[in-house]
Image (cartoon, rainbow, N blue to C red; front, side, top):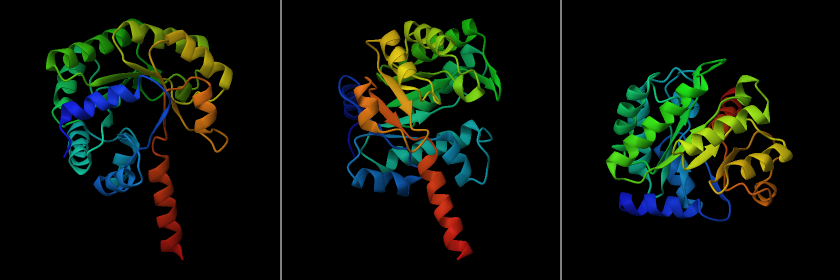
Length: 244
């Protein structure tokens, strides 16, 4: 098993140039299979993790997430980025405490959302304070774990690139290492985001069959993920086989 510090260092290196794919396993077995296919890093998906427990997205608890992250990190030598939803707390101190617990699972990266509840985002000032708290917790740990800040604006039908960029630039200034607005698909908006937060890297989520990694790389995107799509494909295959 690769040393955690080595995995974190290699994860940082992936963010420095080029574009890499960050596939999302849903259990230890899928993590091992993705490693064997040659991927260089993995990311958890809270929705995919919830489905394995018979839950819906956003129903998973922090204890279940921590157990899930430990299983993924034990299963692979690759760096693992944690989908840590909104930090499982509203207040910055609660986010910091939960981030400290997540760091103990062996993750190399961790993402924090600005979604207070489905259809509701935290006010910008509070969202910034939450990222600052996560940053402080990581810095105090001395791990160097990559901090990803997400705005869920597009997934909550606030499809306003200026709104999203305002949040992501604020999160970058608050200490986020990587920025992410899942649901953004328009090339011009993606380019505007990449330029606004530069030199910090941007993650883009594949949302449809027309999105290509090579095209996103040409736009300046540094990393590409698929969220719960791999797990959803596996469940669709399961349903079809069971029905047959």
